Image (cartoon, rainbow, N blue to C red; front, side):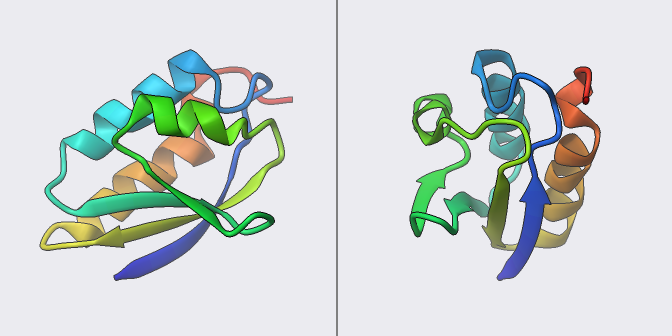
Length: 92
């Protein structure tokens, strides 16, 4: 398992479009992908747009990505790149 801290950088946070982008990218991998909010210790399935939206993670939220499986290295690289890029949205 790879555990990596990530930060929500885009202005609108993990809203519908960003959550959809994350869920679609996570679904490309066979690994189990979870996103944790360390302030609540709540983990959600990063392949589920509904669970991601329920996190209500705004800009600046510090989250933890948990990836486990045969393609965990590739999945972690791809998903952290999305966070680093702000899901292709403006970052303030």
